[in-house]
Image (cartoon, rainbow, N blue to C red):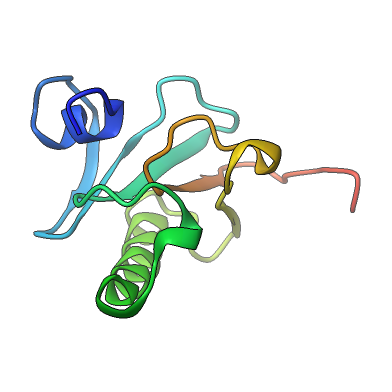
Length: 114
């Protein structure tokens, strides 16, 4: 997808601050962090939303979760705690339609549920 910002990051057309990378996954620091640690974890393959995972692409979910665990260790938040967020579609707050997970930490996170 030529117009997808995350696909362009994967291709190296847009620079990113890489945190972790495998043949399937790329993780990089968010350019507009909402916490001291804010990493975006994406599949390299273009999958628009969480709802687009199925059959042969479902293994991408396992790779994404494994990458979240590795990123938490790299950023030293694995023991302190962190939040993982997946926004899905417009009403779920998704802005970029390339499946991605946010890894947030580095401070005690608060919201209406706390």
